[in-house]
Image (cartoon, rainbow, N blue to C red; front, top):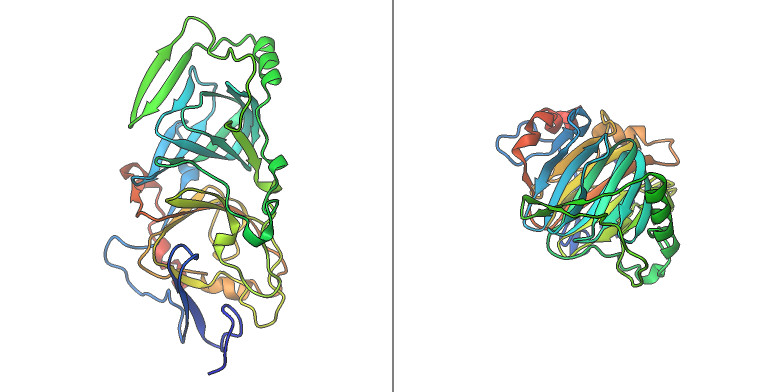
Length: 356
């Protein structure tokens, strides 16, 4: 048998399936099959690919979507300035702004936010959102362990994004903003073990004179992330890791050039990521591996079955030179449970979409 590099030189009319451990970091094998791995005709039971349309949410509030012992995933719609600052005592919180713009007041200073930005708020840090436009956030809470940056390894410490891309809060701008807007915030709502506790003070809670150190909230614009690419072979999603914890990773899918080799696979390979549940939130653009997607949708592909590109994507990618997609992916080592409140948002026939 001819020796073959993964994701290249696949025999005509055949399909490759990757079976791997450790979220693409561990042992892996590549199987060449006569038919696509997603050719099921019927699924009976709870384990299936799922899609949820979060754009259908009407109420401006926070809705828990998926969860386990280490992770909460929720969606937060904010249209008006809240009457309280917030503090999350459950863990670090990573907000991804899907729509809107505004400012965040923190004890460390003022942060501006807009669509396409991550906002990392470490555990127990007080913050106050003030939207300038109606805003919505895809929210990831790390319940056991802090978010950290990925190891760049051979790529060097400035790969993916440099330290200057992490925008720190500005304390002087905070003082000016509070004065110019006559703000006096005296209430903090603390989230702890699925309960809220309210602390009220006689004077403004934002009274920091100065600070120093390496613990602080920050923003990272998705457009400032430099995706890792290869012009010869399709790379696994793990190379797009933006943040990680000991229990899950967060990746950013961004526009990039497609592979140039004639025998290279240009769409994501069929795969069984056997140790992880995979979630993708679609921010904007044209997600080239599947159709009938719109911004604000979220897919859930649990461990236990192969998944990959839709049949039309293999043909549609021919002739294209670049992708045009912006999405956030989460790979969770522990299985994710679904909140009962999101059943009305599910696209029920999504599991059938590989048949057309």
